[in-house]
Image (cartoon, rainbow, N blue to C red; front, side, top):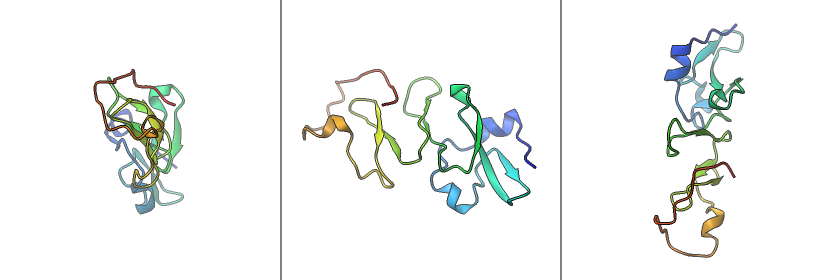
Length: 114
């Protein structure tokens, strides 16, 4: 049984990546059956679902309320402002950096999911 309120959903963590391994205590609710916390994810896309936190990653670098990126290993690129697979510790570069250029913040694009 899970009970999630609007208030608890609004107050849950934006990033559940490391929390899911610790029982998802920063999530919006608690599941008595599995004795763990849960996240309500996909709200900004109108496609809400319950998640352990592993696939709850909300980009807070994007304008407005941000964008759901899903996988906790996705990252926001400060150069092109897109999203890319950064890996567990953000050790993979964005595709826009494959040419070896340095970070140039003047090349700003609208934030979008790649």
